[in-house]
Image 1 (cartoon, rainbow, N blue to C red):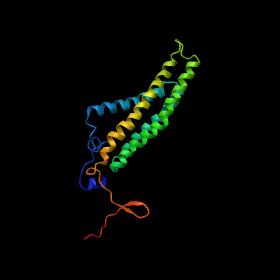
Image 2: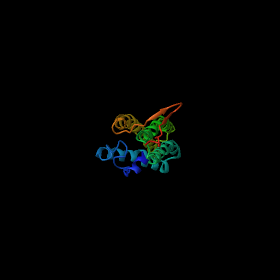
Image 3: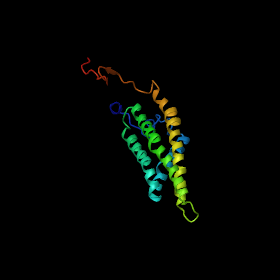
Image 4: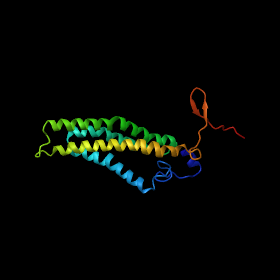
Length: 189
């Protein structure tokens, strides 16, 4: 797709029509708010929690934050790929994050909160209980947000945009042993 753009002198617009959802969402104020909230609760707050919170909380938060960073790198590095591959990057990362690190974080935060409560750590003179309570609330909020992001936004709003027959380029396939893209015949007259 990138070679076709260069050949036809069409510039790549990563923050415009070439963004997620073919630019249908990037200009809407609701998406900007949604994206801003996503950056704050999925990246900024967990980052602060890792560096300022107790070490047992930081251990729970770190895997989810690493996945978010890897997703960012994956999305940036596939900007010139076919549309379908580009949309599979956030779907894959969010799916893994939801059913892996975020679910573990939510369950473990509940267990840790109960453990600290039973150990008597929630006395009025000990302010550590604020960290554990905040971690518990944040983990469950992020679990709900990531589930909505996957099932409500990516699969129901973004993915159908990529099934438009006029917008998504068709790739001719040669089915031999493996489905491989057909090569253009250079001997045409």
